Image (tube, rainbow, N blue to C red; front, side, top):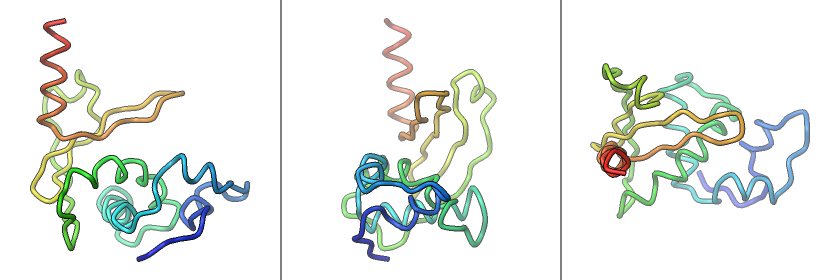
Length: 133
């Protein structure tokens, strides 16, 4: 699914009925087929088996964070939602996912800050460093 025009169809769907500029789309995510494909896979698992363009848009920033962790990029994204852990609420973990055999955590965002998606191992390393403080 190659995209090349900015704003992309996903940002257009997400911002409708307001218009979105090419610059706003660029700030949200890069124009990369891997990003669009992974965002679609995330939307299928977390939203709907046949996600709308708007639902796919909700995962573009997450996919943009994740795709570079896979080199080479997989030919197919395999995404599975994992059960919550007993300490997820304390950690601020919104959801755990298995993406092509790597466990990721989606961290809650706030009013003015987006959430974050990172490998569980990296999250645990950051937590350990923060506790040593």
